[in-house]
Length: 218
Image (cartoon, rainbow, N blue to C red; front, side):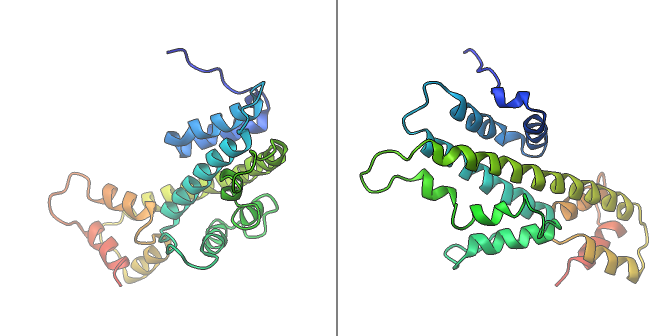
């Protein structure tokens, strides 16, 4: 099977940087981002192009929330909670230090009045939505991805440094346990990475493992 050519959008340096970061952090989902650009560039466009782009964007946004949740150790929102999507986005932006970032602020918009689900689904038995509806919105969506992925990248490097620091501790002090509890939320990537590194090759619990257990207890 012949492979599709890469979208022309990647000739733009900013788009290419977003894609490379996206591919590194969410490797299994890179095809969604490529297909979004492909759908916008195809001539003649699909009659239902706006709906197709919106479906792709929904998957990307959902995957992005999964990645950030895992990084900071935040639990998924409860299904059916009023304004749950927005509340989760607000919390994740705060976790990444992006509450006041102008591009990341678009994430709030995509969780409310410009939620992609409103475009993805048909309206009664009416005609497909206009292509123009998603063209400018997609550009803002990619700008939002850039801001969030930059912050995720920086946060992950912070996680790696923290893991390396605490995994080297043989006999932790109470102060170090307290610091670890603040740095490594129990359900975060950081905690998982720490435990794997601290217990690598050990059949019995080590002092490092006990350090994590004590730090994440309660």
